[in-house]
Image 1 (cartoon, rainbow, N blue to C red):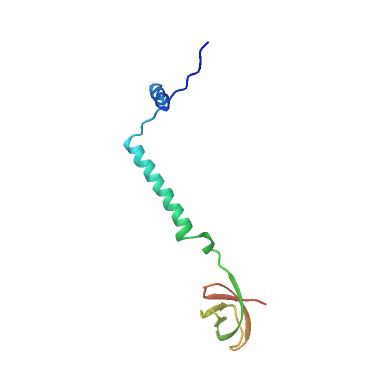
Image 2 (cartoon, one colour; image 1 turned 120 degrees about the vertical axis):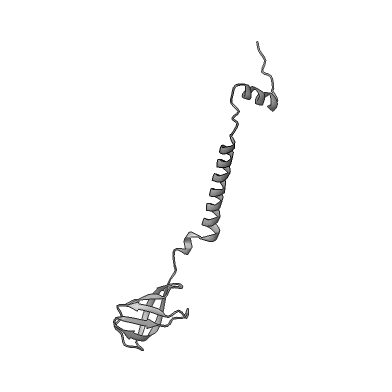
Length: 113
């Protein structure tokens, strides 16, 4: 009866190489793997640090304001963020109090009834 012998990792590696299990990468394959790793790393860095997805979704702000001027269906109003808002389809007289909805940091708004 044959006994199982404990083999060292070196003996296993030599046997695997003898059977053709060890694969040697060519220079182009090595450079391709490095290039692919760099692309993946750059994608991770860009998606998490430079351009987070949640920056695409702006927070809506609701605020009461007064129209500053109105002409040809376009009104302008000043808001707390100190960015004058442009309001389309607005036919209010200057000085009329209105409720606005706008994206944080944007220069356009809509009137909320």
